[in-house]
Amino acid sequence: MPGLAFRSAVAAIVLAAGRSSRMGEFKPLLPFGEETVIGWVVANLRGAGVARIHVVTGFKAEALAPELCRLGVTIAHNADFEGGVMSSVQTGVAGLPAETEAFLLMPVDMPLVRASTIARLLDAASANDAAILYPTFRGERGHPPLIRRALFAEVLAWSGDGGLLALLQRREREALNVPVFDWGCLTDMDRPEDFRRLASALARRRFPDPAECEAMLEAAATPEPVRRHSRVVAALAAEIARRLRLAGEPVDPDRARAAAWLHDIAKGLPHHAEAGATMIAAFGFPELAEAVARHTDLGAGATRLDETAVVYLADKLVRGETRVSLEDRFVPALVRYADDLAAFAAANRRYLGAKAVQEAIEARIGRLDTPRERPRETLIGTPR
Image (cartoon, rainbow, N blue to C red; front, side, top):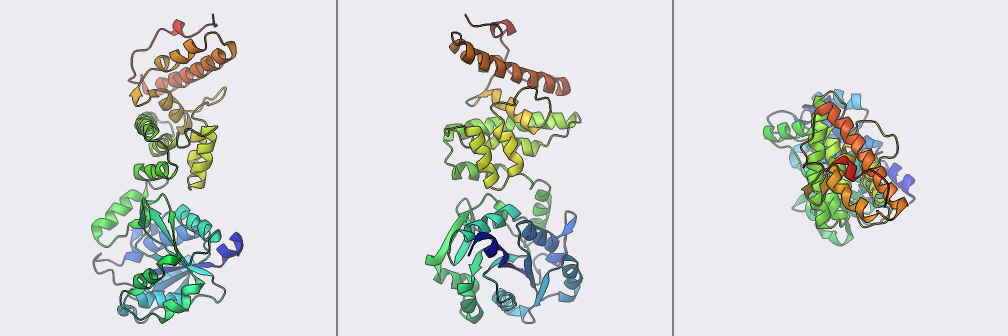
């Protein structure tokens, strides 16, 4: 089935029937950011393009119903919710429209699964006929699995021990792992401390954190020396961005850190900056692509003090894993190209551009703590 047609025939089953006994409060209706937990789960599914969302209710179904009506989802009530999770899965599957080709199974207590993770799973399912697809983060399977129609009858008839997990294990040969860059696919919230941790992390989920950046570098087979360089650049970029933000500039330290961590993800490929930007967008983080694409050259006349400028400068102030001045960074190239007019001019242009960015940033935050600079006259001039 073509990709768009397949996507339109995928439904989500959200399991929200449990008692939340370990939480002490009813999880689906807990406040989460500007939403409820169930509202956040539904928003992520819709953000991935999933239009058919079926929520299985049970405990406190009447209390949950107004919120589900507000969200505009389909309610599938499990009168036998005390019978366990499998009974809720079966209730959800039984209520799917006849034209449904697959379903995503999402526990309500996993609100930090990214929309990009769900979209990546749907893309993989559109291109592959595996009966079961699992998102995996750094090799560990998470939620939501995608289960195709070929297994619906078996799910509905299953009465064995072990529930859905045991059923799926019998079909392991028909399963496909889909690497994603999202620790949220592994993280639920059973207890109050789990809820507090996830709620605290919510504000910073727009951009990948260090573990997610490392997962992307691993997926791209970025060499370890390049990764070590990127970690140092990321720390410097985050510090510059933090100071700019304190000075009133609308710069996001998390965005700057993530883009810097990933700026050399395609190092070794032709046009690695552009290749890296394309890769990062495909991984689900298009908002980082510009900073990755322009980290080698901001272009003439760039004046914005944004994350792209921060990543550009931080990269120039780190050689390998060592902080250096711009002069130390550019002197070797200028000496090397002293007899090549065009190459010297290009290197000198990059130096002057980086210097202008550094001066603009330092005008807002004060002098950066960099190694002693070489005299300017040793760099600027014409080749011999």
